Image (cartoon, rainbow, N blue to C red):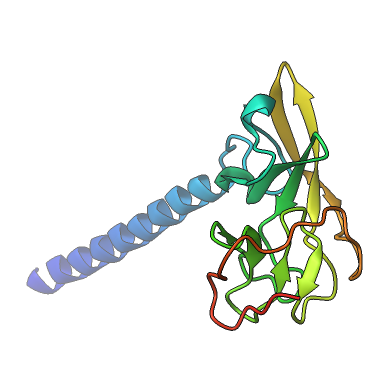
Length: 168
């Protein structure tokens, strides 16, 4: 009789363990497959008022992985990813330029290539102003301009933020 109880106990234990693993798998699958609000790549992201986009600086839009600025009165959305090896490129307030901390590429506020190993300027996303709000379409990717393109001429305002970022 005690041997039979042990077998039932082990059989029930195995069934419980399998049920627990199946439940955990279902929970994980639901998290991965449930619909999410639009954000990031492949979505149209509503950002800020077009009036709040600066003419001489940038505004970071984390949910779009982009920066907004105005070039000749037009709102531009620059990808925060370096065209060299996909590092995140921060904007340096002191120099007024984008400086890649990974390999030293430098881009001006318009995303034009200034120096470093990057093969082109910063990539952009399409923008549209709807009811005064800038909408960034991260599904519409615009390849950065080739080296030598000068959309704006803005020399560095001050010292570089990243060590080794030379200015051309």
